[in-house]
Amino acid sequence: MEFTLSEAQQAFQETARDFAREEWLPHAAGWDERQEFPVEALRRAAALGFAAIYVGEEFGGSGLGRIDAAILFEELAAACVSTAAYLSIHNMVGWMLDRFGSREQRARFLPKLTRMEHFASYCLTEPGSGSDAAALQTRARRDGDDYILNGTKAFISGGGMSDLYAVMVRTGGDGPRGISCVLVEKGTPGLSFGKKERKLGWNSQPTAMVMFEDCRVPIANRLGAEGDGFKIAMAALDGGRVNIAACSLGGARACLETARAHLVERRQFGQRLADFQALQFRLADMATDLDAARLLVWRGAAGLDAADPQATMHCAMAKRFATDAGFHVANEALQLLGGYGYLKDFPVERYLRDLRVHQILEGTNEIMRVIIARRLLGPGNA
Image 1: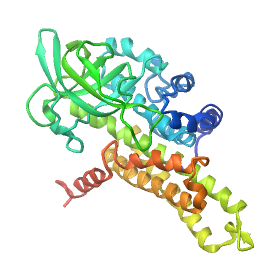
Image 2 (image 1 turned 180 degrees about the vertical axis):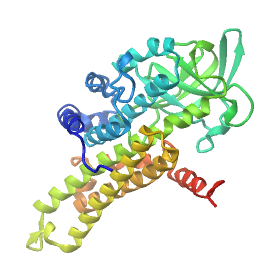
Image 3 (image 1 turned 90 degrees about the vertical axis):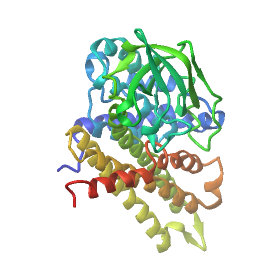
Image 4 (image 1 turned 120 degrees about the vertical axis):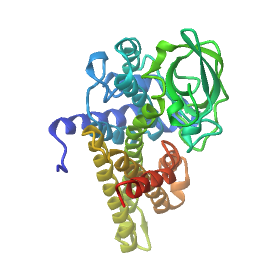
């Protein structure tokens, strides 16, 4: 059991921190204000290997582990939570291809994804199926060597901008065993997009419905066997939950650092705010919650690397705790800054808006509790 980073991990942590501070942080408020998808900034991250962190090296991936990814996403999110979170989703799709794709599929799609010459989106949620993901209705009907897709996906990050969509579709009967995963390329006839959603946060990445109307996709674009789609989607989400938890750590850490600096500099009633014990205690609790969350995130990540049978539960625990703690720390930081925290001239309100959705996506935190409870109370755990 190690609580310190290796020399290699410290080196790429520092690389990511310097990159985020120099390349992302100065522009993050502007991206948020203009609702701008920072294509070139993402490609500069890809040039450092951040677009395919745990994809194998054969087709351009970095070949790192899940703890390594958590370290990197925390650093990137400390500059811009929204952009780091999109990068997490892109990494998730790349891993799905690397893990479940054929050699031909990997050779065809991965090189452009690892360079972020192409962008990727993950498409599971539908207007009528969110937490009940296995009830999805988007259907893929076989027609010769193709599938014909009909249906709609909702809340898709990168919708309309991405070049490749990993889409969970129903190829069989009801329930999870009737679901398959197909890759749909931008420009495919029958693929269209809804309006760009207006959101509280995550404004540096577009969100839109992804719609299929007699959309013809080659069967050769299916990942894995028919009926494997739900298993693939859930495996991807285990990693996605750790990543989004790490993004919460980064955003919350930035808020904690801002609050600490404010307490040291600001004076009221003849003394620094940092000299009031009540505020010292709040800062101490914020730091403790973040450190506890980080340890849970690293354990979840380590479980994925080790193929631990309890990894799904540990990832759910990490996601639930870290995203709740992250938003709480951001909210506490805003309160400590007083009126300044509410102004867009200061970064805390942006972090708070971006962090809030982490308690909803990649499985709501209520669903995380369901996953944990099922593991605790299921067969063999009486």
